[in-house]
Length: 87
Image (tube, rainbow, N blue to C red; front, top):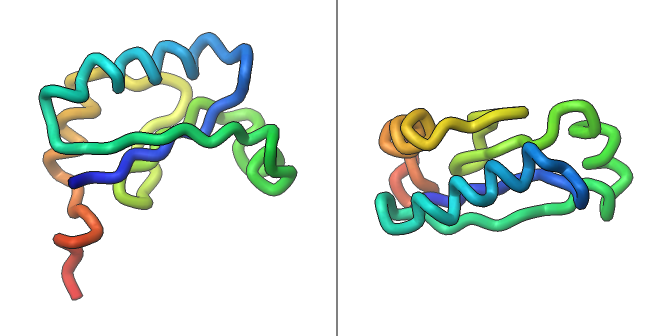
């Protein structure tokens, strides 16, 4: 199972689009996603303020600003999950 993390903030239209896309793709691939509001953490706010939404797949930055569903599925297929990582 892949872990997808979305850094976002309230009132961000692009963030809403990314979250809607992820919700639509849930049945097409094996991933769980969660959202982190960068405004709740000053360090994250400083780091990602001008880049949101930012999408990480298995701990690696995969997208910022925009995310196309087909590209997301391709990136997911090429990602190594935490349990699949080379040791």
